[in-house]
Length: 283
Image 1 (cartoon, rainbow, N blue to C red):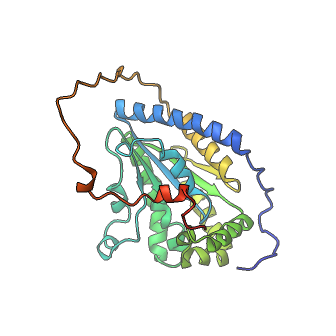
Image 2 (cartoon, helix red, strand yellow):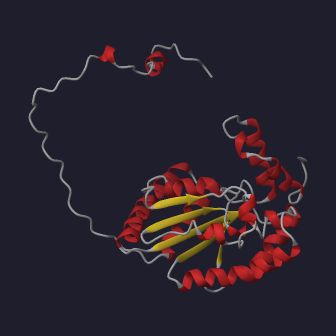
Image 3 (cartoon, rainbow, N blue to C red):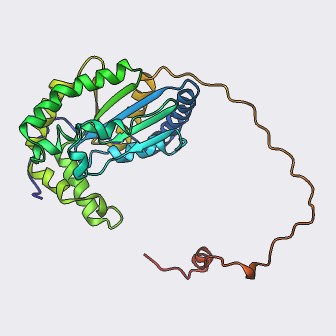
């Protein structure tokens, strides 16, 4: 990746949201997301949230913050792998339809059917006819979802080329995050303008009144997470659902049960105690 070049993006970089402000507001918003979840379950709502954008734009980390305090039986992440040979012969939207929520469920698409308008189109993984058919059918498909009562929200995470390159370099240097980089991700650096044109064309065809695109400026990930979650909460007409009062019952008196001796069971080694004694590996 070339370094030192002037960014193609003229938009000034976002100021970083202070951590203390970010963490306080994130907790408040996550509390509201729990209320939204309970409303979805109580009212048998079907909610779909689509996360799209460039590689390293912050989609995954935002999804993590959206879901980390929610019930995984209610809120589910759909991140589909490349289609199988059989799936390639199906109607393009078919395998995504299988991921749509039932009543009382939330599905968050970590990339979605818009793969066809982005990576598949730019990298030549679909034909021109398949690409054109997608741009024609996608608005029809989404209108059908909305007409059937599904709440559908679409977010595009927008990152500058300079910040994307910084994040790629950070991943290369971090062994815990290197798995996030693939040859396809690195290819996106050399095809920046091709992806920009593809995104612009996609918006022309799919930014429809019934399901508009909502752009999230994501050069600052903290701001992006806060802005996206806040917007989602403002867009869904949820209300707080009164839950039944719960009380911890008193523990009944002992009936004589005794735990088996510890030496009859296999315990994991106490690595934490070794750290406390200064015996852990430094790193």
